[in-house]
Image 1: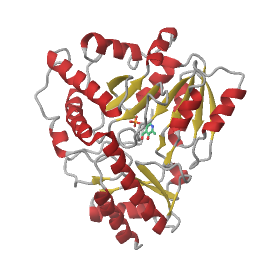
Image 2: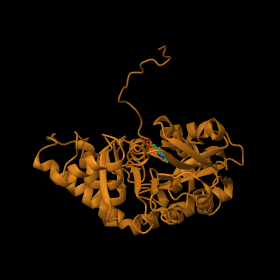
Image 3: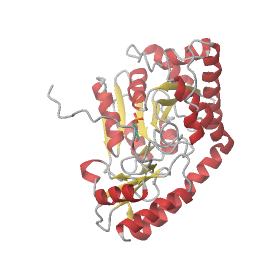
Length: 373
Ligand SMILES: Cc1ncc(COP(=O)(O)O)c(C=O)c1O
């Protein structure tokens, strides 16, 4: 295979940048420090203490009675695992941007029969469309898979209402990709019958990358028995049975990242999901107000993300040059629009994790200065 990529030696000599991208985001200094500990074995009692602590603390933070898996992986793993574990044949994937499209693509790669319900980018998935599709289709869908926060467009889909619709179909499982939402946008998982919901912890959990969290209902756990293609690494039963028997993970986890997660989860419990949700709502309100004053918002009104804002570049500023200058002059990094279609048409601000209205304001001040707004 011919490659154009050449080695660029990592020098360790880079200026620190404050992250306002849609993940990874800022991590507390003492949480980072937790990773610098002498190593221990993943079958030692100490590991059981660590893993049972982070799993039970996560359940408490999310306010769920469902089971929790904390896996050494990024969120992508649970696109694959949830498909392998739950889908025999048909899966319905409403698509409204790049990540929901990729979810559909993953399921296709795994040989499943995928029906997309396509929305224009920027539009939200509507529960009534899901109902209509489920009512009218002559297929049985094993899974309806919906992205909560479409990070490419800044859309927050109404997964609560969609969950209520899917719950009317007891043999259809509801899978939610909440990769960039969970931890900053509260959802009552049990109330809305969400069978599987997963997140990457480098986003609103404000963690170094390396772990994915997945919440699994009893039904989804049981379902795997009937599925011959179930995932090994992300098998719900393998992960959860191992937890049940030993309080550990089935294979060697990223222990340093789990140490950091333990510390971060204590902060998250201290703030509570209501407090965290409220702080994210305040940041969102601020960014929306700022965006309306200078630009516009790309996502459909009423369906806007609480962790990632996608701002429509109505002024025609040079997005790439602005990002570069803000990085050079202010050591702050935000994101362009997703892919070639939205690259210059929009830009994105991640207001997630440990950010506050004050820290977000520092970024918007910098953008104003650089772009001459
Ligand atoms: C909505 C959504 N789903 C899935 C992913 C993939 O997550 P990861 O890169 O952690 O595998 C992302 C990443 O940005 C995302 O935003």
